[in-house]
Length: 533
Image 1 (tube, one colour):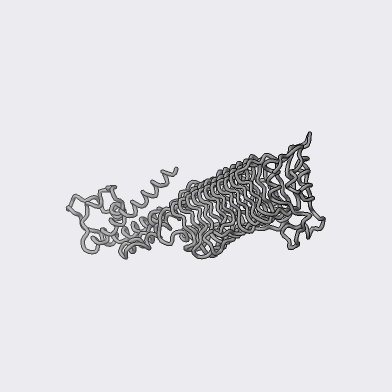
Image 2 (image 1 turned 90 degrees about the horizontal axis):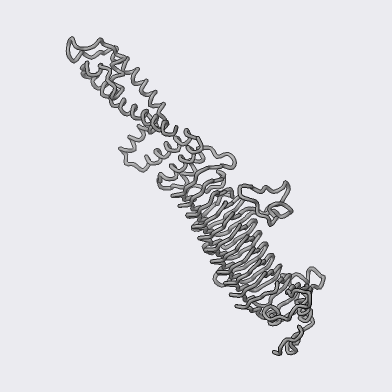
């Protein structure tokens, strides 16, 4: 190829009219628009064939990007191309592209190959691509791919995006390995916006890092026959992960602005909403989220062997406010959150929720969530008895000042534990529950002590026992005698002065044993109350 002189194209390139227009627009930093003016024919995703007047060769595009002509005096060179049909494979792998690049409404004949290349800013808007290969791509500015349709996957493994990555309304179909977007190790310095994305295959973000927020509002992720639709273990998002609804009209949801932490964005009345939907499993294990994980209005469609896995995630706030999954499992084992914002209608039923080791500090129910339903929530998470979920719930309620509810939770824990005990221990548990509610209702123990005192007083009033030593016994008092038998430790000089026999001896023994049990229960309840105060 001959050397470029004064910005002219090499003669052996034999530029077409479309390529010559693109070449001159590059030098001027202006836009080369190859549209026909007919919206149907200008749609890159339509069925109309594009003729030679719109075709540019990939080798000419690559020449402009890698070793293009100098800009016109007083202008900045840039590739701004609209409505072009780019033939052959655009391959700039390993190259350094300094000009600004924006390709809009373009159709690519073959895959775009960008591995290990370096761009300032790359925007491909509403383009049709067979495939995008961009592993280890590096951009100083944005990478925008909104409204593109990619037939055989996008690879962004270990790519580094200097500012924002935008995939809004992009449609991506799976590659031969069943993955739609392969972005393991991806780093995005600011926002990753993939709102109303359509992904048909596995979206993989293993070990990815997002400097601000990751938004999948209104997106549809579908991989029903694979294991997961979203596979993102060890994902780090400095602010919020949004798996929420998006508005289809002008509303805060359709805006690219990310609301600040702690502020929920409510759509205006009459706005049509498109919820986030995941058809297949989702894995966010070991993720770190600086502000929140928001699942409001999310819908998960899973098979019985698929999971919404949030194992060991850490975030200040988890907003579990989506639709109840009908199949599959929700896994929260080892997760640690500060605020759990939830609805009773969002959690799956028995066997569909696992949360062993799930730690939270504050419960913030959205709508009615009575204690009975909260206990059903814990029971659903423990098909086999485990004490930790009950103790965590009781701790949270006690920290919120709900002491009586906390005692009810611990009582429910004892009742659940009783189901796992042998028959003799189970019978003893029923007795403890019926009499003193395992000590969590000390007032009931005091009532039983009063009843036993009255029974003992009535019985010994009619059947007084003989003195142990004649002439040394104090004056007979059935009230004090029954009370002395009932109260352990305390000595009223009555119990040892008389010698009951026969039936009276059995009555006295029963009162003494019941007194020990009940008094211990009352003391334990008082001790718990004093410790809380």
